[in-house]
Length: 147
Image (cartoon, rainbow, N blue to C red; front, top):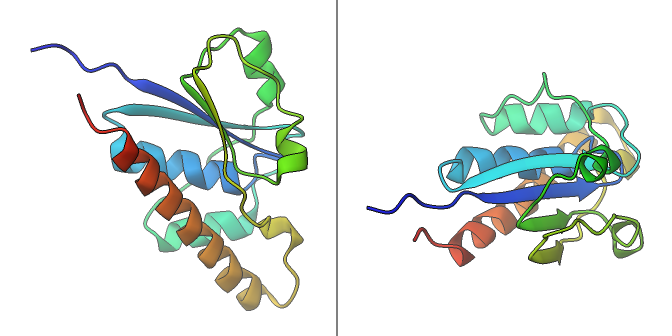
């Protein structure tokens, strides 16, 4: 039996504080046997408490995660099969081109940091973004069946 190749995926957003963190967590949880997901930001910030809250509600603890710079991955020469940007298209264009990347994908999700309203309203809206991200990750997994 041939050992299956692990597909390396880097999720990128502006601050690596919410969207890319959620995508990384979902891919590693749902298909960590076939994928190795990491995440990074163009301008790393601090972990968004809204993302921590909604992921906890989904049964995933990301509270100990730290934000990372996409340029650090680039400078180290990290290779990825996919680089998936989860921010708007203008910011996605700022992402460096990684050597060896076989595919670059753009998924656009609203930024939880830009949400207004009371805490409960922002948590609810972030939960919807989380669900959109999970659906995209599930579709990505489905498009890449085990070999």
